[in-house]
Image (cartoon, rainbow, N blue to C red; front, top):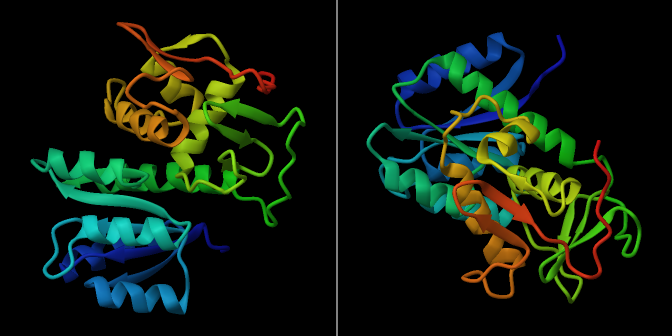
Length: 248
């Protein structure tokens, strides 16, 4: 059976690692394990995974520090594993670049659904060879101070430098670009980004949009490209140089 993808489990609890490794392997994933930061780095050097399941509370270097490290060095999916009461950790983790989270104790089926969701987004945004930037084509959309290349899945600043973004952040920008000047509720955004595994009223989408605003808005405190519509949702207002991508 061909592999569904490669997953690295980073958790200091050997029993948790063993349970997750057995479960994910039974669903076609190639699984490796690490019990701490040093072992994680060694595993990544041997083979870069598609997704990393990262426990937040570990001795030594904690999971939030590792999220920052991973996001600045690698293009991988990151799913945080947190305790049920660690709301602040979940919020901070999403703000610094994690793709998703699951809370302990969790049903392995929920974790599998989230792994599949992140894997789909990674596969959708990563062609085998990233094409050169195509400014001025129908695939380029002006978003605030940036240009979004929908074909190559790149977000570029005014100097042409690429701005890193997670798979979920790209999905949100793609949806906004496909629906300019339309108010989209949180529930519609979840549906259009194919993230129905999330809870319908999951406010973490607000965290993603706040993070996007810091990347694309000249003044994130007074957003003009991705606007909040009170009690309704969000609306993307294209810039003058925008060429909106047609609805799929």
